[in-house]
Length: 72
Image (cartoon, rainbow, N blue to C red; front, side, top):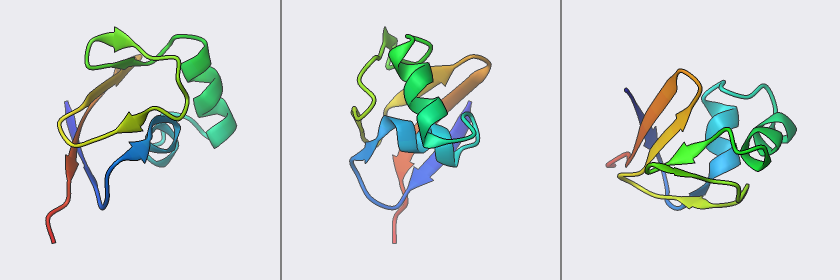
């Protein structure tokens, strides 16, 4: 599982998929989400703008991400 640090929370789900290289663009990330290919905290997530916060776990294909806020 990869640890992903975000500088602020919440952040939209599709942005994490794009920034982590799981999707090549925001449009592709949104399509993956709407097609039910993304799981957040064990549940299929179809809301593209779902707000992700520290502690959430995102799964998509072989990728598994644990989200945490970067402490400054």
